[in-house]
Image (cartoon, rainbow, N blue to C red; front, side, top):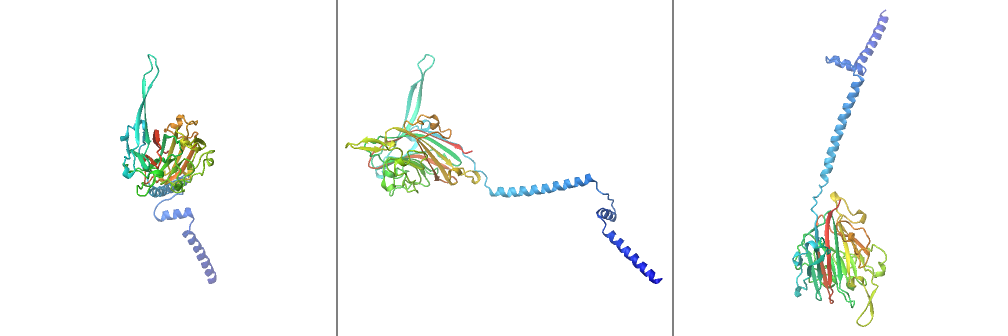
Length: 416
């Protein structure tokens, strides 16, 4: 009997333990009711709609948190990117509108002690009668201007436009003509450069490079050290062995000097036969030197097209390579952001582009035909040099030659 009670007691205690454990760890729903009862509340199982609403609230809270994290990350990233620099206004300058005489430029003066000459700056008005009828007709005037370099032997001569030209995030388009007096004896000398200096440069009567083969642009010992960086379009009608000039005359996109060693100025073809059949021609072109003339001794010499006494036309465009926030505007040309991309078209006298209005208009980029095209990436950091000083330089050796610029027009525009 006692044994039976002992076994029953043990069984009851085991069942009670099982029930106690079940009460301590109820299922989720029972647990919620159990806890609600413990704290004196009343709970009911949420409906499916309430569960869905709860999930939506949780999702919205997660999305808001993620959005806040993204905004913080974007703000941190924006702090690392400099704000866009403001774009300065555009500039237009031309012989027709701005060349009112020598006072419109800063020019070198005639001074034998420092071997400088005064360029000849002229403006003219051409009278034109429009028809002869009683109701129509009338008279109009066309203003033109020119800069002529006709220096004495061993002289340099320069003229600078006083208006600084913006280049930072700009396109600069220029059209002009150039006439070199006819070389009767194959003794032309020496040349001229359409020059570009930093806009912070102060133009003065002594701002000019060396004489002779330095073309008023390059540095010459004991005379001048032109500012850097600089670049230009060189028109050289003389052959100077020490400067690695090619045979006959040539034009080239030059850097900080006139020596065609591949550093200061580009290497030029050895002869005209290397570059008269295709285009573009790199950064130097000698042109067609097949023309002949008789010398005073009766022999015939060949000479370059620049020296034929005709007026030839040119177009130059300069593109800033540095864009906003580190962008490179010249990736297709292979230039660095610290470069400008320079391209120049040649329209020789009598060519199909000679009377083309699109060739002469600087309002738009030019993409038409030309006698030749030269192009080059040139170091000119727009971050430190956001503007340019534009001018015309000339150097003469032991031969006197006239170089006349006309129809000059220049305009800048924003790069999109």
